Image (cartoon, rainbow, N blue to C red; front, top):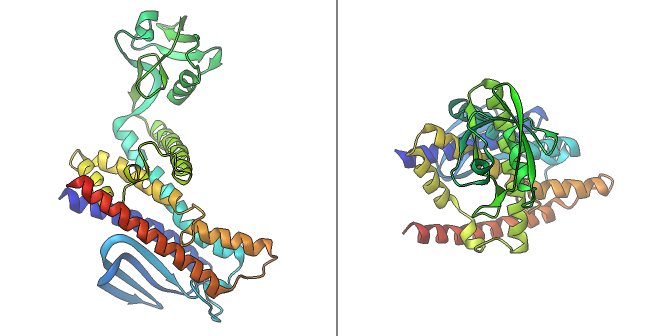
Length: 335
């Protein structure tokens, strides 16, 4: 059942991505031949108007097949006949829908778990916080005379302290108290003082937490992709990247721990898919957006559609080769 849940979640994330392309294509008046979830042999399909909607066997992707997307077409409703802005909006919509979806499914997660507040809910023994005299229910209001509005502000201030003494002002029983303490490095090399937040449940806190978490995860992913291209990923690329087999394994494991764990990992995957597709790699949405940017720089003179299709095909072949390699590594890790 957890594997089925993993496959269904993966399918929903792919559906959201392709739905973005589909809706913007329809809005631009582009002819869509097929809207497919999954790849490979067809399990089910139905025709509605000019578009065929299909479900395919392998839950590893999907596509929105538009007239003239890969190759030349004289049809006035083809992808290539639309303006640069219209084509860019269609390409960008898929990743954007994934990013928005990540925020949406995080909201109920934070509503269930609660969002971290600036009030302390935990003081770890034998840490700078305990030694200085901080207590549970203290509300941190300032660090080094800078107002604190969120738990993320606290984390950022402590991490940027570089081990130097910080002044922390708290509200305790209606009074303001100040403490001086020196953050220590933890096992991950981050400066901490041994505190944890009290979690509060509110719809505004859940929305704020969803947006903040999505932004933070996005920054981490951008850093990771930078390390990936420079070959500086800790532990090596083959151990840091997971393919479909590994993703389904991770998701099924989280599904066994509960619905909200499944929702959280789903938001991570959706966000990952959205950002990954914006990378300037041929065959990905980001690569196609780069081609449109080149066309705009050329004053609207189009690139040869067949040559552009060949570039994307080569990029797709390389991506598939990389996927096979990562899937092989996933299988080795599993067994």
